[in-house]
Length: 234
View 1: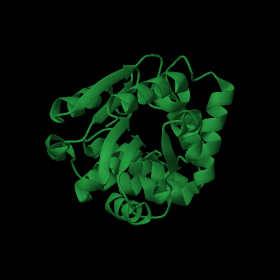
View 2 (view 1 turned 90 degrees about the vertical axis):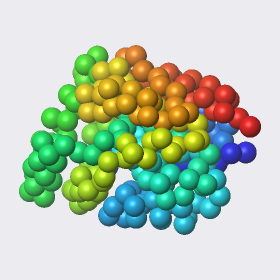
View 3 (view 1 turned 180 degrees about the vertical axis):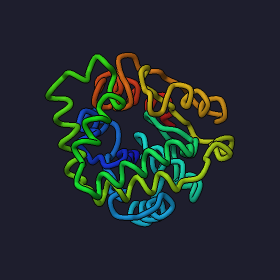
View 4 (view 1 turned 120 degrees about the vertical axis):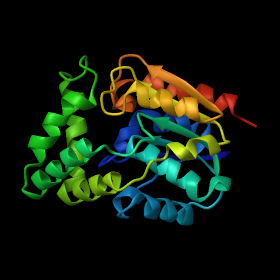
């Protein structure tokens, strides 16, 4: 059975993939990584992941987890069977985004976590979902579990990353690029750019989803991933 590593996004944990784990376990050995909570940079996260998870893997990365998946390919392409990028980007942060993240980190350090997280809800979710209390409360609880130190450290790791677009033409394994139709953080334009540059990419735009597509449209994402896994089976 294939090994599949789920790579959560910034300040997220296994709950981000709660709707996917059981479905994917029918096809693969599934492991949710936490290296993003234990290392200060994407290159160090990738090295830790490769050390702790021997063998070859299918990588499914959401947002920052997708950035980590690209870094794993950069360091050890022979260890990667396939990659799925969910709501991610290959671009570096712009100066304006770095400034926003820096301001957010200062607010986290000052104890103003909820102020930042609640404001982020409007950007993270499709407008249809921002009033779904159980969904939003679960999302906020997950980020609160990470705490200020992790929110700061992981934002710094993301800000420090380089441009992965030159890497994309070298990705010879199967690559699924999925993006919520209303994602304003890593927009469909980012997804189309990745798919255009990688030679074996498949692009999927997920209706009814913003940036948090695994939480917003779990069944659609499950169907997409399972069909993709069937297609790339040896």
